[in-house]
Image 1 (cartoon, rainbow, N blue to C red):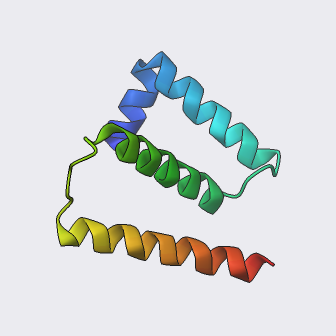
Image 2 (image 1 turned 90 degrees about the horizontal axis):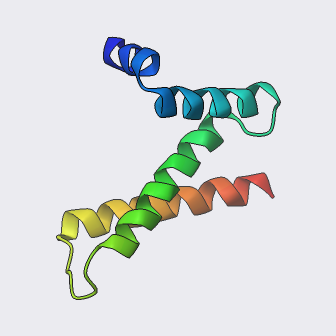
Length: 80
C-alpha cells in the first residue's frame, strides 16, 4: 500500500483518477465492488483490442476469461 500512497502523492493524474473514483463512491453512484468490476472490464476490453487478431492465448488465459465472464453473469443475474 505504501507504494500506492507514494504514487498518489507524486503522480497528479493518478491522484485525480483516484479522487474521482472515490467521489463516485461517496455520492453512491457506484459501490467499491462495481468500481473494481469496471477497472477489470476496461482492462479486458483494452487487452482484447490490443492483441493481434491471430493471437491464440494459452488455455489458462482462456479459462481465466471464462471464469470472469461466468462471475460477471452470476452477479448480473442476482441483481435482477
